[in-house]
Length: 118
Image (cartoon, rainbow, N blue to C red):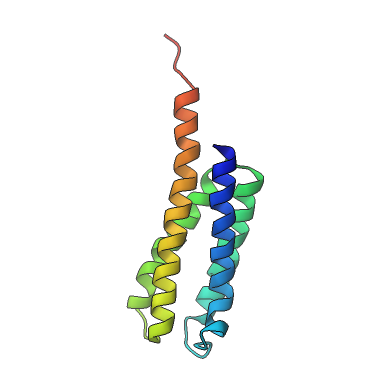
C-alpha cells in the first residue's frame, strides 16, 4: 500500500506543478488568481513530495485534500476567466481525490494491521 500511496502522492506533485504553470500555459496570467494557483501549486507539490518520502504520515494528504476542496470553491467566489475557473475546478477535484485516496490507503493499512489486544 505504501507504493500506491507514493504513486498517488506523485500524481499530486504533478497536479501541483500544473497549478503553477497553468496560468501561463492557458494565458490567463493577468487574472487575480494567478498567485493563488502558484502558491497552492507549490504547497501541493511540496506536500506530495513529503508524503512520498514518508508514506506512513498522512497529514500532508489531509492538507492537500483541503487545498483541493478550496480550489474547487475559490473560482466561484472571485472574478476569473472561464479557462482559469475550469482549470482550478478540475485540478482541485483531482488533487482532492488523489489526496483522500492516498490518506485513506494509509489509514486503512493502519486499522487492518493494528489489532487491539483482548
